[in-house]
Length: 355
Image (cartoon, rainbow, N blue to C red; front, side, top):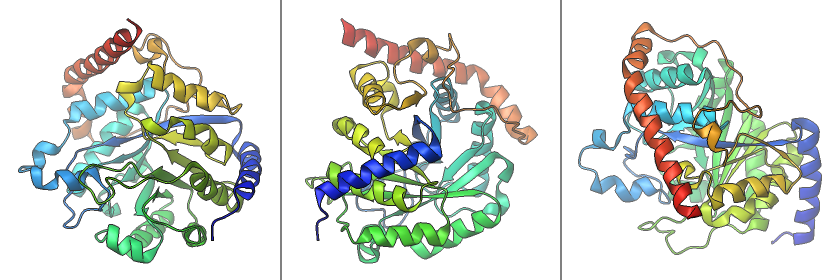
């Protein structure tokens, strides 16, 4: 049964007020930091871009991003006041590799990190640099989940998140809307949040990828998206809600904030920064009466000429292994070159658009 649109809007207004009460009057920008483009799951998720690339990649190691590129992006995101939603990417890294990367990212950002890298081996991680762990649940409807994400068993994800809680870490899940879920599945999601005592949830709306079974399918409607977000906010006033949208759906941002979202995510950062799309994101957020943490247009912040006052970052004491500290120091020149490359590329796109 389709919910009444008026009811969705009324619930959204209540959710917006609840968000203000428990989280203050600001919205932040976040983005996942990807480590690579290869997924080693035998049966990758049927909506995923990586699933379309799997057979094209002969050497998975070549699909990994270089360390200096990852660290340069982390540094730039701090400059712009964008928190890392989580460190993520194709599966297939050893526990030591994951630990090394998260240590180095945390060190250059002076900030603890969230991980979304499949099932985590906590015993081989430096938990002092980790704020939380995210499980890629994607779909709460069991039948749909088993068909679309056969290699992401929800039982094991739940065990991991409960263990993370025992270790004093925060926990979250990701949910993708537009995969065939029904309104009655909202109840299943609310039960899962309660069972796992989650600190946060990330919603994405499906961005149909060429070469997948969803290529020509429409994504979730704005009202349906608002319904899921406001339902979570009304039932869990204190949870952090992150909502992802895509370049062709920027006008979703205002309605998502109005229905209870704290944070907006999921953008191709450097191709939008300072351009029409980046400014549209800012306008959408400000149009709701919220203040904005971070920037999507301040070129001086991007270039490191000024420090943002409205940043969600608070410098933390980060201690990492001597080996990783040496690696960061050895890579410093390469990292700086990469930062310069990203900044120049972004500025050239801005200049091109204004001329």
